[in-house]
Image (cartoon, rainbow, N blue to C red; front, side, top):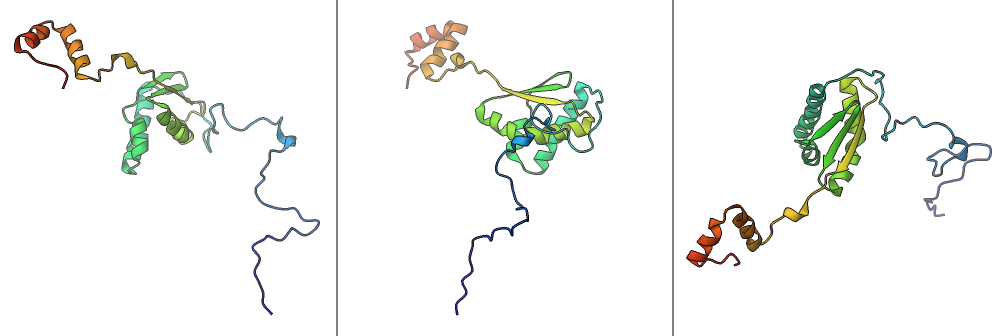
Length: 171
């Protein structure tokens, strides 16, 4: 007699509830209030305060978060948060990133960062917002001709020098 192990799960006996992960949303819970805060994350365990904080305190906590990333060799987090300009308006912290990739990475760290800041400053009302900074592409000088023309506008003697020496800007 050969016994073959089956990889199929046996159904739960009649009268017992099945356990496991619920894969659908319960319609019974749709009208219950969410426990999360406005910006996608709970205030965190043990953070009940709403203490006032200064910009200097926030910047010190921000730098502590960056230093932790540096100590842990987390290059993505270090690049994303080190030297970043942050604006503060009440409990709202705004950060500008350079592109959509950085914006996506920031959203991945947002809950962790907010929890860290809320805990350090004992303020459960802190909100972190991010935006993509506008980049002016008109001022980009790519070719050597463009660079020369730009510099010649600033200093007209360059045109004369180019003509007198018979120089070419394109190569």
